[in-house]
Length: 562
Image (cartoon, rainbow, N blue to C red; front, side):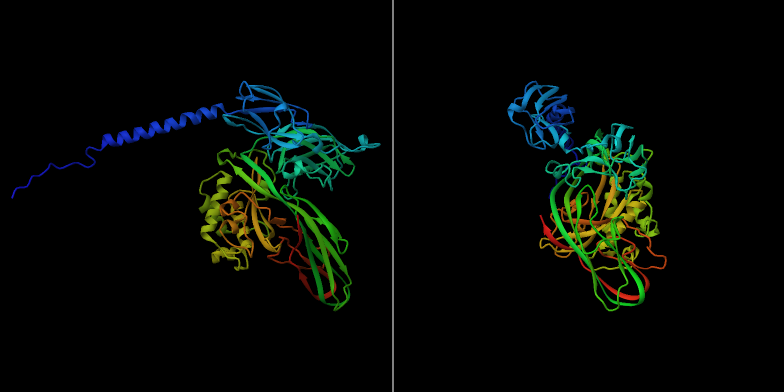
């Protein structure tokens, strides 16, 4: 028997030409695809400026930029996605377009569209939406007026000094108004509950100083290019133009819903031998860029303090033994869905001087255990050496989800106990996520409120917001993002990962951070409570000879959705 033996073959012998041809083919295909893409990007229209940025619908608008094309052809200008009629265009050149503003463009993002693609956006604001100056005899002498701004432009979080007259020595109920845009901005008049504007937030420390002749404020979340005005009890100043610089992404407000809601408290089984007082601190929805037009529709009694840090204080005097007393309040609020698109590579370090919230909202407080060793260790595990605050926030959520399981029935004594047990409800989960962010140097707030399901039932819930300089506040719902369920609430976002950075119009916030109030009386005995729809250190305070009583706090009742 004969065997013919072949010479031994070395590994991969004879395959190098085939591999080389394969790689070369991939390179050629990539080049074929990349060249048209790069060419299209190079030819995409770019809007450099629009003039005027504040004007009248029906007036002339000049758009300057590049790559518009020598003739309009199929090109068009869009105002919030809607193009004017052909007769609106006066001239069209490669770097300049002149047209009449359509009547519907009260507050619009302006784009130029050509065959090469869609341009960047510039904001056009109708002058009718800006606050009007006070009128009448003496208004020029008594009302506020702006003489100058330290800068005509700035990003979200940047500092603006406003010099002028008649601002008042103390702020009180006065405010600085920045133009706000959203679904309501082109549907409501400027006189309608201040909609169309957004003001700096006390909770974020955005009012840095206030005097009769100079104000120092931070550009608030939700502000867009438009105007700045100062509003006091004596009127509203003339508007000064202010341009909000482009940030590391876009934020939009949409899907508006209006809710009417009611809450009440009953007091019973009172035991008292003489004079007494009982104080009730009731929360109401907070005002934010996405939560607007908060109004009190009715109260069963006049509050001692109508609005103190987002709470109304009520006083019952000399409650008689074994009597039943009650307190109720009704509010209306508009809720907008929030969608964010952040380009992580465009998030920049915080410049100096940093906003105050970069000091206060990275510290532990009575609610957020940001300095707890277990929280600090977890934050370090999540973030490593990462410096980008947006990427830190994403990594912290992923680590928290891998460490602590969401369980709606898990009621722990503290967030740290929930972390140790590796399971938490939405209350503890939101606080733990906030604590991790603060430990990593990212300003963050826990938010308490409700979720409204399709049957109009309200469920107590908590979530988180974190802050990016130049962009503003970004919502995150750790419980829903983890795929968890809250009662019968059906999340509108089928993709649960969207609850990082986005929020639906079913979340109603009653507190952002811990609302801290002091005792009203020196000998007052206070009552705190967890897992309600508000974060606050005092809900009730009893003083005098009252020795015992029972209170019942209702859930939030949704009485209307519009």
